[in-house]
Length: 123
Length: 457
Image 1 (cartoon, chains in turn orange, brown):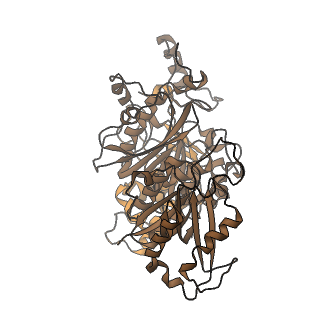
Image 2 (cartoon, chains in turn green, red; image 1 turned 120 degrees about the horizontal axis):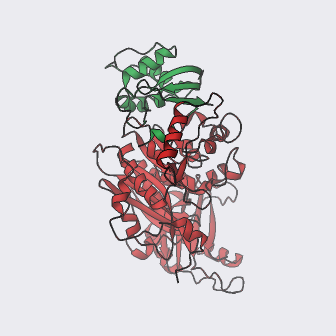
Image 3 (cartoon, helix red, strand yellow; image 1 turned 90 degrees about the vertical axis):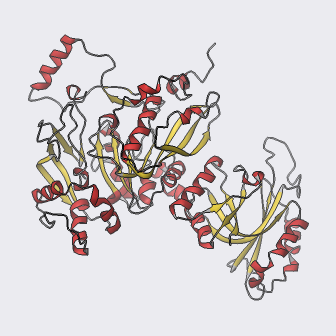
């Protein structure tokens, strides 16, 4: 859990933290690889919604360097397989996600991130 | 040319039947039409003749609709056997290919009644003009021809065993095309056999109906913002969709032990890889980076009887001096500090629903659907309750009641009609809603429930 597709959709949402609040930075992570069903149509449909650089950076930080720095125009099978692996098969099970801006730490335990805010962080 | 098929419905959730048919037809990109007479469209009747373009479409409905028991190729109907036989003769072109060499058996049965054996035989013999030459095979015939009599309910009346035999409202005749296969999923997803569930887990038949309303299918991304123990997710992922779940209370999703409860249950069904992720947050303080992500939102919001909805905040605001102390302690927590759990306050149901629709408008893709349950007080409910929760760009496409007597719950399906990208909700939108004078029947549902829905003196 906390697959990179999810990581690519979560931003820090502390009150007033509006710039540089994405992506969250992984720290002290334990990862697991688990197979998922390959669905090229889903991947193609989802690509416009991704922040590409954030995805590539996160993947490299977790040791996967298969994705190119720029989103390619030709979506061949090999690329889609790599994208599938990065988005859906790498699971961050334990660790922390930190906001680069306000330094809020979102802990991940048993694969479930705790994105709750403290009382002074809500508007 | 459209063809006619006779649908035999399961005796449950009558109001859900037609919305379910429409959803499955939309999911598979075909259309059907209801019979023209209003009386024949009545969803409380057990049989309905549908007009469908292709035989394959009728099969799809039978395989996916939870409320279909079986589908027959329709040959004729009547309020008497004379009328039925006359219609059946006119349909000869449909069944003539079975005359020569097709093994068959007859099935004579009734709804709300038991036909005596002697008359069953009589009925079968009355079809002798069809001159079927094939072998009669009771075990594994190539075709099953069925004669279905519909009696009006005589529930509550004392009568002898076969009283009123033959006084049916309507009788139908056709060839079995497809047994409904989706009904067996109700047993598969039975909550009692699930590896993980809670006291608010939802009945499997209802959650399967929700998954159909949400058009769950491979490649879709579906979100439940009140995930709880995951009841809505298991049928949804069974149909191939990916589900993302969030809840303000992570304990509901985790349960005891590891892996978390929701994943244990999903593993039991072999679909754990389709639970995309689980996340603890208050949906009114959500971390979504952008909108237009999901094909559907499917949820059973807590309505306060077993579990009440909560959102971040305090029931009573802190005084300035308390707040100063609190801030100081939060800024420099002690080293042995337990994991911090922020305070929560109740989230009133009618506000939650208004917020949910605005949130859905932000998070859904164009033509995406939000499917949810709304508890309501039977005597006080009016249509305005539902219309009032809409905002620009959202329309109601189905609203079916599950009736428990003095109260009930409505399965509401709302669709995003345009492709405008709306701004993220502020979750204060419901305050504008209060300007109108109409108070929906679901407001203060918890209090009404525990007062036994008594009218105020």
